[in-house]
Length: 179
Image 1 (spheres, helix red, strand yellow):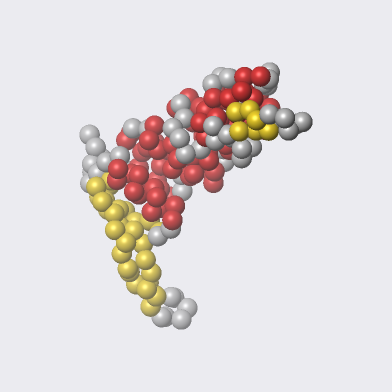
Image 2 (image 1 turned 120 degrees about the horizontal axis):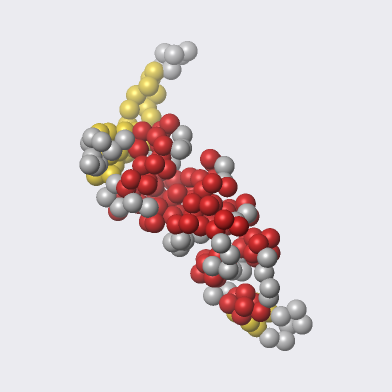
C-alpha cells in the first residue's frame, strides 16, 4: 500500500489508514483514485465503499487503468460510463474477469477490426494491425484460450495513386470455435 506523510510532516500513514479515517463521498473517492500515491490494491479498497451504480466518470477512468482484477459489477459500470476509445484499455486490463462469451459480446461493441474477433461459431482467421495494444491483447486472449494462435505476417498492398507495392505487417489471428 502507498504511504503518506501528514500535513505537519510528523508521521507517515498508510493509504489504508487514510481511507478509514475520513468520510468519503463519491466525488472524493474519484479524486483519491486519480492520486498516483494510491496503488491499485488501495483503489480496490476505495471501490468497496460504494455501490457500482454510484460510480462517476473519474472512478471509471481509474478502473480503466487498474491492472488488478476488479469486481465485474464495477467494471461493467465503468464500461457504460466510458467512451469507446477508453473501453479498449479497460477490456485489456480486465480481460481475466470475463468468459469467452462475454469477451465476444465486448468485441461486438468495439471497432470493426475487433467485431471480427467476436465471431466464434466457427474456427477462422482474422487480421489485426501490429500495435503494442494488439500484441498485449492477443497474448491475453491466447492465455484465456479464446484464440488458438496469432503471428505477425507481411503482406503487399498496392498504392492506387502511385501503383507502387507496399510491404505492410499485420497479425493473423486464429479464432477458436465455440459451441
